[in-house]
Length: 76
Image (cartoon, rainbow, N blue to C red):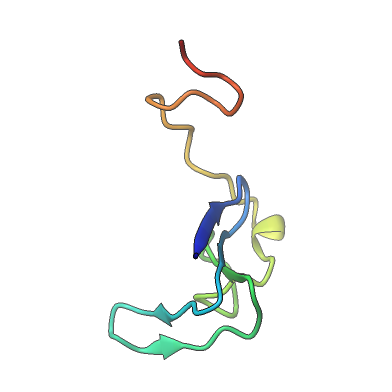
């Protein structure tokens, strides 16, 4: 099974045994480690992979989705 986790102020983290990363041109990028961390901030020097630049760039995620309650709140 493959799992995609969204880090609040960081990358998308993909865990699985057979993860392929393919860009919009069909070029496959070979991950150097598992789990695979994909850049969300745009500042990584190793795009499409995360290199930790988000911590220095002031990256802030999009606001929470108003249709989904925060973790721990059922909304009921």
